[in-house]
Length: 430
Image 1 (cartoon, rainbow, N blue to C red):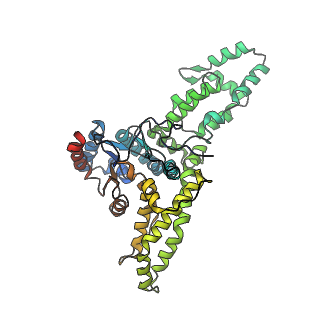
Image 2 (cartoon, helix red, strand yellow):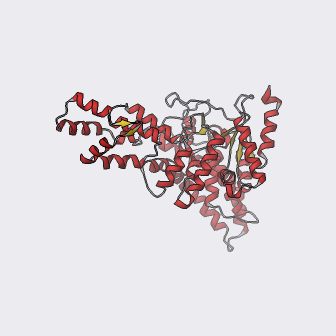
Image 3 (tube, rainbow, N blue to C red):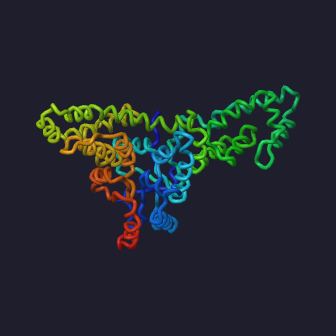
């Protein structure tokens, strides 16, 4: 099934955003923080006086409208607690993320890459609209079994059971309307559902989805035939758009593979797997070149051929992504077109390749899982004004996004001065 492009007419974005080199000069700078930044600024036990001051400065810039801080699906997935002991820290990070970013989010990792490659295949001149202001950080819901879809047909089952007890249509409607009190299911209705053997199945569905109490009540009303399917779907999405609630839900469901967790992980995991399949042969060559018995000549030859290898991998990754959404489209053959129309994909590949290239230097450094994770964040770098990365990856992301109009900051502490300077820039205040 063909995916919708982010920002297309079909996906109805609530806000648009041009990449920095295309955006109006009066637009406030957009800022993407490193995951470690959220951790440093939200851990109350480790907040020094300087960090508290820095946190206050960044919040002031955000709340005054002098800067727009944005978050992504990669942030949310990295913040999600993997064990109960880390749940409180995850909640603190999500609280700070929500205070700083509000509802300003980037489209999901997989959706951004698919949109870029579709733009490449169709030779579309317009850029991908990557930022939304309604916190839609998650993948498209098409094909996902939402709670409302999981409960389809339940109304008919419940109605048939009540009819079997001799209740006519009018009596059944009255009973449904009286099923709630102050937004909660009445005890009598709960007991009736238990007697009919329906409550367990319902409770199982509700447990699998992160719905805030006020949103869960809409889903209950849908079950009782008192709310539409559209209203139930909207309530579910409202919960997803609340990072605070998501972390609290993950706190009690970190070990459980729910439909939601599968839905969030699978698209990005599938893309990452395809990308890894493309890059792994090059990594094997690099590892072999690190062996003591391999002549320096081989390493030198690899460095000479580096640009050629980089172009081959860039094209191969673009085609790996293309086969997901446009399997019948012709192969991508030119790296220059990929670089021109897929800035996020190019930034990701180049960041990984530059980090891998360090394995051939005088002071070899093995490519780590953290480097690959950081490269996933780099997908978003061309779509913001300021991008934060650690000192090691910052140098590579900076080179990978040269000419894209983004400033790559290697320390968190430099942001206030940088953003204040950007706010005073004549070009931005004109």
